[in-house]
Image 1: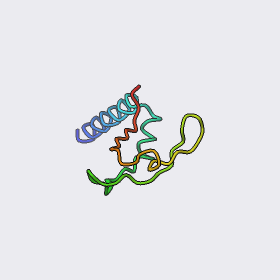
Image 2: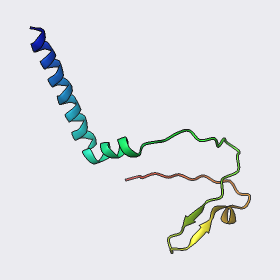
Image 3: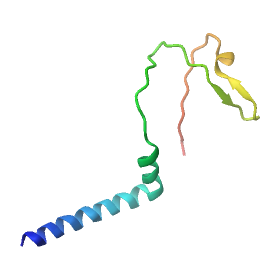
Image 4: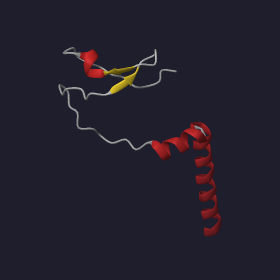
Length: 81
């Protein structure tokens, strides 16, 4: 009796895990497991932006602080597709 219950619960867990992988996508799941190493940064509201070099669309390097000056900055990295 207990053996059948354990097998049933195990099968349900495997089925739910398979459903989650199918829903998320195996490539996305692997990417989340390998590369999602986010941690909270130390920047606070009002801190000066760190100087970074970005690649422009015309393939030239642009330093952030050269373009920024004293203006406020909002940078959003993300995908809207």
